[in-house]
Image (cartoon, rainbow over all chains, first blue to last red; front, side, top):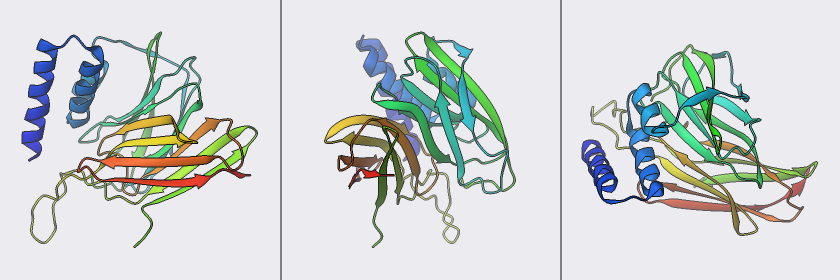
Length: 148
Length: 106
């Protein structure tokens, strides 16, 4: 079932790329495949498209050591002007792309959430703005992996 | 049955902190049933929306990597005591839940 869904998404994505010039459509489909990707570099590539990453003023609050990988509390705060979204990746997870939080002028550019971590890994936070994509990383040591 | 979403909103220094816990299995689709050995189908929240007095102020896209019974906290600029804050989630099986609360002073 999972394979069929993936194929369907990939097929739809290719069709959309071929037929549609709608940027929004492309982004939505690229995100769906990025979530399904089981490889960090691939998921990042699907997520970013042609955009490049530069280091930015992003604070990741996470435990240095997580006793339980099933639920690792993290807080991400962006001090970058006009933050549009905050996305989270866990490099060594079977599906590294965790989530994207859409930020707008009505809310602060900070989110708290709990994520699954299979093993010790970097947590990667990516902030999207009109000026580009920014990144920060922090390592979390996991002593008992979560069922991911 | 347990409430599917617990939500709180509190106002302090002109910022409303919204905290929520959603009751959801967040199954990745890769886990096996220990007795039958069969894969447990994926079942996870894909979208979360927060609104203030009926107007959407936040949304998020999630994959399977968010923990079971997800916790989310965000900060809304402004808001007033008594304002309505609502949170809705939608999952990959088309299920959906909404919960509302009123902003309290902290």
